[in-house]
Figure 1 (tube, helix red, strand yellow):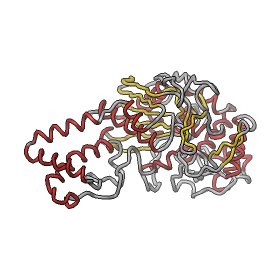
Figure 2: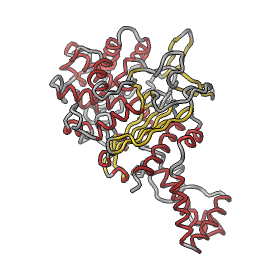
Figure 3: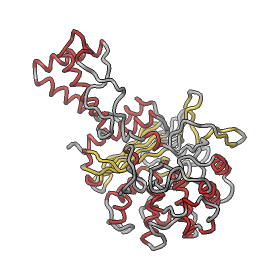
Figure 4: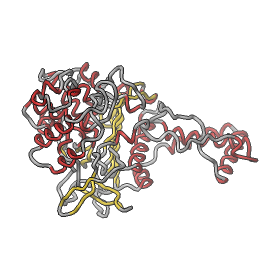
Amino acid sequence: MNMDKRFCAKFKNGLILYRAMLQPSKEMRSQKGKMGPPMNRSQTRTTIRDFGPLGVPAFLGMWNWEFGALFQRNILNHNTRRARWCPIVVPTLDMKIRAFLTGVMIVLSPLALLAATASTNSAATPSLEAIRKKYDLPALALIVVKDGTICERDAVGVRKLGDPTPVTTNDVFHIGSCTKSMTATLAAILIEQGKLRWNTTIAEVFPELKGKMDKQYENVTVEQLLEHIGGVPGEPPTLAWLQAWAEKGTSTEQRREFIEAVLSKPPAAAPGTKMIYSNQGYAIVGAMLEKITGRDYESLITEKLFKPLHMDTAGFGFPGTAGKIDQPWGHVERLWKTIPVQEDNPPAVSPAGRVHCSLDDLAKFAMFHLQPGTNGLLKAETVTRLHTPPKGVKIETPADNYACGWVVLRRPWSGGTTLWHNGSNTMWYIVMWLAPKKNFAVIAATNKAGTQAESACDDAATAMIFKWLPN
């Protein structure tokens, strides 16, 4: 949910707060082709010639320690298209000298290579506090699940920049678009209960909108919306987004007004042909669920999903009490300064990204998806369907391989299929990695957004993968 355009003005407490005209719920956009840490810092390929008179020993040394660092950076995402298993930096004089000495050691003694490898392995598991300090974040937290139990949890830093109150492992974090897999799970629960079908269309649920919505949307199904192939645009109509920020009426009324405005415009692509990451699509699903149940989305998902999984801290909007430091605050960069804030997206897009919860509770949800059919909420085959991307859709980037609330990847460390998603409302950031075949998940979160936050969470996840999945 990262954005480049932030020109929408919203009046709040007598001040103009600049927010996202094009919706601050787009972290997937910034992640296209980048599932995990960046593959390379430049497009430059290092060669022996770059080391001049230091020659072959220096190049060998460069290979030794640069390959180790590269492997550590890229363990999460070596499948991406730009992957290059070779040194990829332009060596400075200092680097050349260090590489030369390392290369001489390699040439003279195989033991040097073993020592260097051991050094690389130890560097792969830095402390969470070291990662937080490296990326200058207010707080950083993680949790690891293996074989149905929480095997590690940690939280470092402060709840609010400028206040000494420390963050704790029980604190609540905003999870942004990781909400989407929860909305998809809720839809699947209602499908098993016979209140909905995978192929239920928008027109079936909202017959009164025929003639008002663009005709191409009439046959778009729930499943297509959950997979982002319903043609719904990535950006909402500007007027609809401004109206959403006005927050007039109940959350159900706000959503209904919002989706009517979205559906009145032509789709961004022919439904079923292209993956377009869209918060609006999930808002439409939420409105459909409200219509068929007569319940608002927030109370519906609380009853059907949060309570059965004992996710007692789950809620909506920014965590904690307004004006108090009883939970972490989000943080934004404004005029080159980090500012603590308690803000969130409007309720109209709750089904796309407004949930908050503790990492322990989010781990319960992850375990539900790692162990399908074991808790009575959904059949195993239904969970499998939630994890299966549609066929016949053009895949341009790894993020396009999207199932119902999950990006589906393949990683050697996971033993095959890997489920991934991140979330951010531009004030928080979180990332989830699930490896069903290993019965393993790692979640990392911080109360700030941006590239530093993404890199910190990737580093923390990488360290836990090295630690808990060594083979």
